[in-house]
Length: 251
Ligand code: AHQ
Image (cartoon, rainbow, N blue to C red; front, side):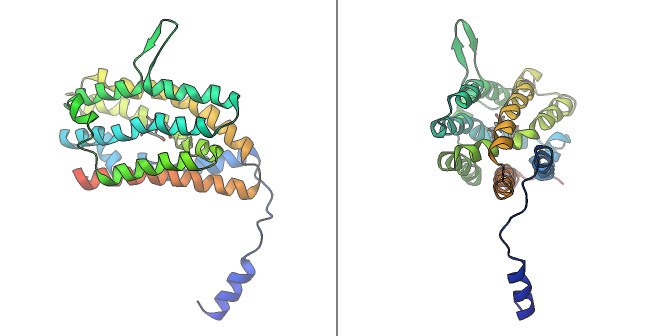
């Protein structure tokens, strides 16, 4: 770096004394990051654009299963780090959403079971999905990075990282709107996971956003929240990269 550039760089480094964004501005900044959401990934565009082969769809479902089974583990890590009973009472619902439950006579098989029904609908056996034989190394690494982050980060940062779900209802609705016409060979009962997630994601975001807006209340911590969200967006993007590398992607 030239002397002049070093002087400019040195003078530009000042303690971030900027005032905190108000909630409306902060939320807008979080939502702006949706431009990096995996709905824009070439593999997703191929998939929801109707250009995926059955093998590519099966590869995506089998690899995404590893992400799905990690979610309750991740959420249990958040619970184990969170000292606030009120927050835990809301957060524990996420584990029930995925692992299912039988409470006071109400039974719900859960989202992981729904994902296995999606797997069977696209022509995979339960066994070959559950034993993870199709999961690409970089899918494992991306998902494991998410779980390990949730175990080690302050629980509020783990909450913030779940806010990629700000953008999830759109991708679930996109699948429901496009797959039946593009892939009539997939039994639409197999799409129930996406149907269920639309309302669950909205409920998740209500809680996660409230915690994030309340906790990250200085400009420095708000900038950190944007970094944390970008980290999770990168995880989802890298997961799609690994699947595209293994199964190919038609642009
Ligand atoms: O099925 C998904 C899910 O249960 C969750 C939980 C949440 C989290 O805690 O990080 N994020 C998430 C997501 C799910 N599905 C993804 C998809 O594309 O189907 C989207 C993903 C997310 O947006 O983070």
